[in-house]
Length: 109
Image (cartoon, rainbow, N blue to C red; front, side, top):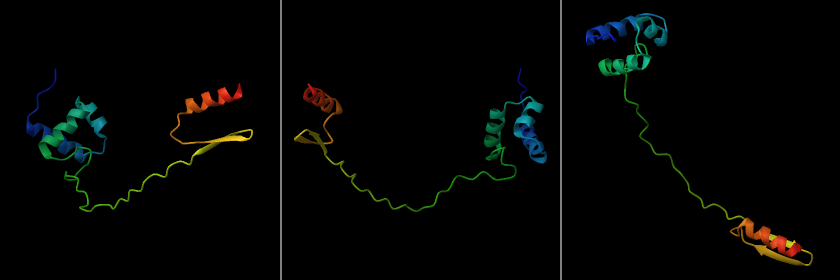
């Protein structure tokens, strides 16, 4: 059964962890803690992550600037010219490939 710890017990654990040099995973294994719960309690009680020893948790602040974006229309693909003997036909890029294949089969026969 899981041990019930008071907030003071948790704060003492976090202080012990930060004073040491072992990884959070090893620290939790030694104390019988789940790593994810250790991190969650650290955030709840101290507002900072247990993995960032001594660094105050602060909200991520992004620069208050916009990046200019230029939108240009995509160039349309050139039409395809199909030549068989002396005959040729210009096909739009929107013509389905299955139709082109059927046309080629019909011309071949």
